[in-house]
Amino acid sequence: MKTGIVTISLMLVSFGTWAQSSVITPNSVDLHIDQETSRDQLGQMQQSLQAVGIGFRYDLVSWEENALQSIRMAVRLADGTMETTEVESFNEETDVRILLSGEGEARIFCVGVACPD
Image (cartoon, rainbow, N blue to C red; front, side, top):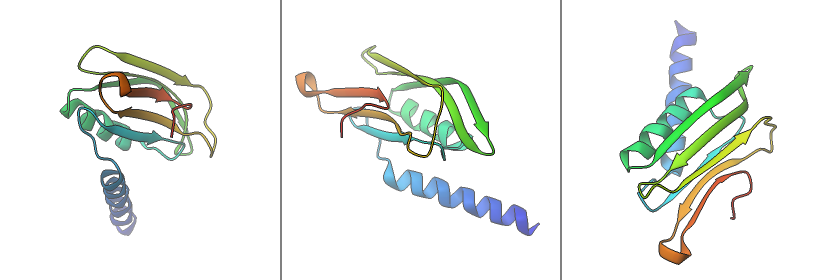
């Protein structure tokens, strides 16, 4: 029973941390997916993006000992613009980013490991 309570507490802390650091609007997204990203966090990202009209699909996901090992994903904006990426191998430095900022000619939309800072 204590293990279950600790697990639930850790999940709530994890969701709380993610929610505090990730503000999502139709014109502003900055999400990071790394080796520590859980199934639940991916699902929450998908729901949060969908709520503002942004599609987020992923497959070919694998974990080893709760560490994300690979993922293929696509992000589609309301205007139909789509970016895709596939990461076949994660390590502690891998940072897959979903970035959307600006509007018009100044808009930056990037999905992958080489997004600008």
